Image 1 (cartoon, rainbow, N blue to C red):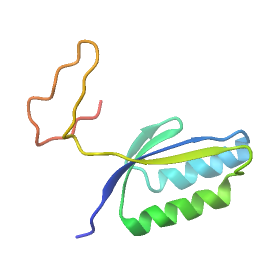
Image 2 (image 1 turned 120 degrees about the vertical axis):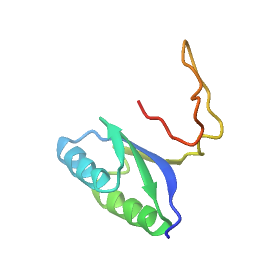
Image 3 (image 1 turned 180 degrees about the horizontal axis):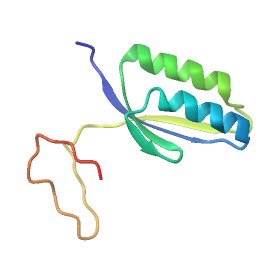
Image 4 (image 1 turned 30 degrees about the vertical axis):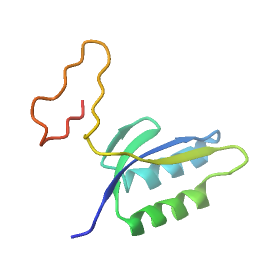
Length: 94
């Protein structure tokens, strides 16, 4: 089985044409997301492919792209009236 890691990918692209291309690239790797931020479960090879594909799309002088490695649900923090998950064996997104 391939070892996958959870990443958060986000972009800020000024040109609509490049924006559509970046959205197309990220949707092919993402497991979820909204607007310009996506969750991606990637193997090392998929991460390299994603970074190569995005590098071909963005203009580094005008656009921004970030890929953050996220830790598991081991460190859950809540804000406001949020309640800690009662079942630690599941990952809640909502």
